[in-house]
Length: 159
Image (tube, rainbow, N blue to C red; front, top):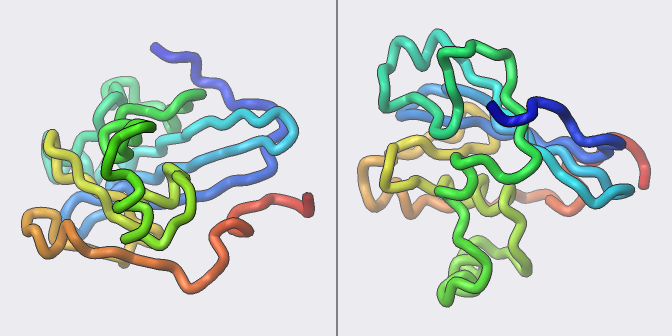
């Protein structure tokens, strides 16, 4: 199993929800240190909904049999890498423009695009009531552009 420890000196924490259909099946938390320039990702599964919804609601890269409260990764977990294009992909600029982003921010990219992966129908939402139909093209094309400055979102204390 991956080392389940947090980075040091965290001063930014952003939380979103891992969704399956209309149900949140977990939280995805991005933690960052502006001091060390390191990040980690925390996955907090909601075991009851996952068990009730079946294997399609299982979170990729997480061994749910361990039943940990949280799974910490110091690099983007599979859930993230499946939903965010790799650096250098040709159409990234087009996606960023569609999401009204000037640069790649993996957390923000997933929240704005509700990005669905071909391997499963999990999607990411900033709030648990931001629901899309991940089974239709129209649903997968839904974009959620926030009406607040996301550069300032999630900072734990003054920088």
